[in-house]
Image 1 (cartoon, rainbow, N blue to C red):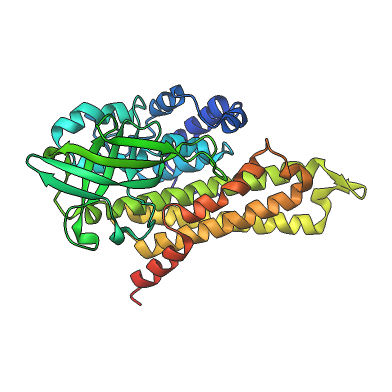
Image 2 (image 1 turned 90 degrees about the vertical axis):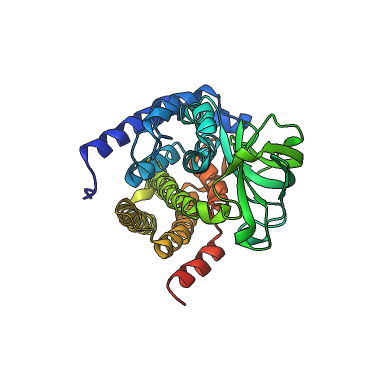
Length: 380
């Protein structure tokens, strides 16, 4: 169906990204995934397309404006490469960029922001801790004032892009218990007392680096506090909504790959004297997959339109997040069934996507947390 929200600019952007993914990523994606990393120049090539410039001022290399449809297009098209680790390896900076621009000092922004936006440098958001993921209110990492510095102690884990990032936005407790006692800090990776250890035995996202971060009396200037003291979580709450919308768009791209791969396989694979696609049971699987894709695409478009018009539909975003990952789970499973043994072999996108479903269902807010948040936002 024609998308009623498409504009010439959005269509051109999609076409540019599709051509980029087809040329610069798909031919190499299996090798990168097996080797566990992507080349750094891919960050810079992608940065040249403006994919990290949404809502970032032009003087910092950004687009000077935001459009959530463009954000969704970027996440969908990059997900179509068939390896979620590629987008994760580069896109880890996405959820730290907006807080850096909005909350950091002019000196920090002038020094680092353009390099991050253009892909020369990496940045990550450090919120999740070993003792609690979505339970941010229970954050243990602390930041104690010492003269004109803060001293940070604690650890973070499952931080995407962390082994290659140069800069971190770190949540730490500066006040009492709960969400109101958390502040944000800009921390450079070369600070004394900072260390990181890779999480390299993952089920999926093989070519993306995730890490555990350690802060052992890491001293940062007081000027590195981002925004108001004790209000750090409140200041970045909307950031999580953008992340979840983008994860819905990525799930959509992954679902489309599952359907396309299933159709191509079913057209060529023969059983009982005819192609798979002529068997009713297979045709019904394809119809079900396609209907779920249509539903998610309509939901993502509706959310993007509302966000572009100043709304933050938290309940709908939360519902879309768990809906997207449950339907991705369905589509990847059905694609595996259609492909049979061939789908179980490494080196094809369906096998990779099947392994990556759970990181989509857990990361950015688990399905269980999203269901509870949705109902609370509905007023119950």
